[in-house]
Structure formats: structure tokens, C-alpha cells
Length: 227
Image 1 (cartoon, helix red, strand yellow):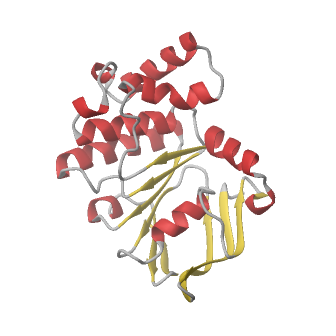
Image 2 (cartoon, helix red, strand yellow):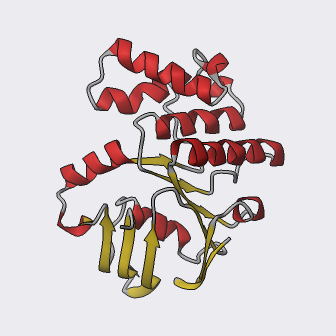
């Protein structure tokens, strides 16, 4: 069974009385352990699709299923719990909390789940060590490079052992070496932890790593290929 599945998905935005169709008739299946890239130029609809898959937005028409369950019938609280417990998000802008140290940022999702301080600190440090950033534990975001901030964001995304990680242009603000290191890291997590990764990207270096490449243009899937 697919961990994520879309059925005849549409997303239409209304702007000053003008309707803009961002996605149309999207049918997609994503399985556990996939390393999928949604590729396409800016404005193609890939980020919109990523947001719908992560229940950060609602479709105009059609359905998204997570673990076989229709997300449209879930309450806001139920969707929030799914995102917190089963999904991890990596944003282009990192979205770290500036007043918190790196380890406190990584701990934050566990704090929301009610972990006690000792347990969440132990797990956060373990994850940071796994990602090779244990030396950043006490640094705040403004004391880190872009690549270091992105690795902390990855640690935060996987600390609750998500089934799926959704990453929106994760290499966009990184130099080529930092970007390659980040992709190596995600590939390692995909292999060793069987975490499902879904990227939205137009970066060739991300696209060439895809096990499954879904090309999107003008809101439509024009190609869906397995490497």
C-alpha cells in the first residue's frame, strides 16, 4: 500500500476574481523507502503539490491519502498530530528558531509531544551525532553557516522518526559542496532508516539523485520515471 497517494488532485487559486490553476488531475503514489523528486521550473506547481502532500494546504478538488486514510476528513488537530508524529519538513529558509540553540531547535518537536527534558536532550544529541553536527549543540542559528543550519533543520525533521520527510528546495541556499553533503546525508537516512523522502526541486544535483523522478509542467505531471 502506498504511504501517500493522490487521486485526481486539483488546486485552484483565486486572485482578484481571476482563477489560476496551480495543479490539475494529479495522480501519484509514493511508497515507503522512496526517494522521489518533484522536478519542474518555478511556477510549475511542485511546491503546491508538496504542501498538499504534507497537509499544509487543502486541494480544491480530489483527495490525498496518507497511510490509506483520506486527509480531507481529518480535523485540524488530527492533521497537526499526523504532521508532528509521522512527517518531517525541511524548508528552503531553514525556519530555525533564532533564540534557541541548535540542540533546543532539534528538541522542539519532542517538546510538543511531551517528552521530558532528559529524554529529549538525549535523543536530540544522538540524532545530531548521527548527522555529524554534535559540535553545534550550543550554537544559535546566527552562529552557524547555511549548511550547518540546514543540517540542524534535517535533525529536527527526523527526530520524531517520521515516516515521510518533505523537503522544499533544500539545497537552494547552499554552495555545491554543502548541497552535495546534505544529499549524501539524506541518501544515508533513506538507506539506513528507510525514511521516505519527497523533494520539490529544480536543482540538477538533486534531480540526478532521484530514485523516482516526477516531472511537472504547468500544474500537470508530464513524466513519472523510476531510475
